[in-house]
Image (cartoon, rainbow, N blue to C red):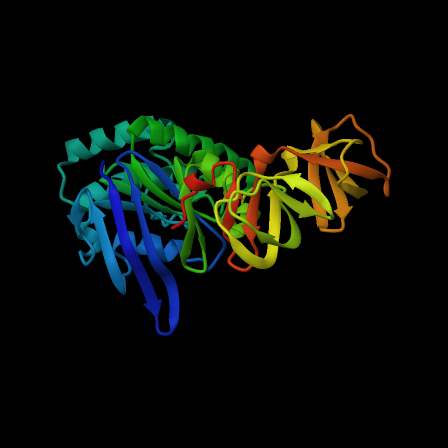
Length: 365
């Protein structure tokens, strides 16, 4: 396997910029998820790494070699598409072995490699079956097998679970991560599903309008979002934002919200007066009768072990994740309490975090 290094990658189609100045490194054996909504540039980025699209500018390095303008066939990568793209007239064994056959590998070596790959994917029992009659999960394993059998330097996957139903998708998420651990493969995985990215990836690049908003571990992305977009895109429910207007001074430890001083992490920069947003995850909100920051219960969603309660405040609607055994009345007034270690503060104009518990560690790209 090998590392992947992307430097200032840009792709423009006419006047439309699909990818803007992207830079990141995928270490040897690491699993990176490119995460974002449709049209954010994640698949275009993947296709440039694969050699299926040429960048407008920037460089792509694979295992230290500059492959920016190399043909896809010269990059020693394996691509797994969203659609399985299997050969319906071939059985499972021949589908998996076809890339090796195309390379002119001896038949004995092909049989050995196919058998090893099938055992790894636990599909030994269907090697002689036609792919046309297989269930979606097995078809996806065959597609993965066709990529793995080549033993490439890295794997590129473009929403490979997108066509599976929810039950199969959940199973395959765990199987893909286990497979990654067994073969220690360098992998770049495109998805719009935050649950897939959080469950599988070592690192996540969150993309929006062709720009990488934040690059980091799942824990960093969730706990220390670098932008409001990341904070809103990650989490279910997403981070709450309580908007207010104020002037920030460097070193301040409090902000005024609804006339109440709320403790926040130390503010690292001075700003002119403007609209700000206090960000807090639903699980980091506590109800306290002693808190002067008040809101009215709007509704609740029971989730078994807990419930998500919506509270209407003068700064906007917020959602709190609280124990399931607590009961509330619609319209009931409650006090809201936050731990400053779990808060973030954002500049609404730029969308950037200006204070959080470990703001200096948030990675803006």
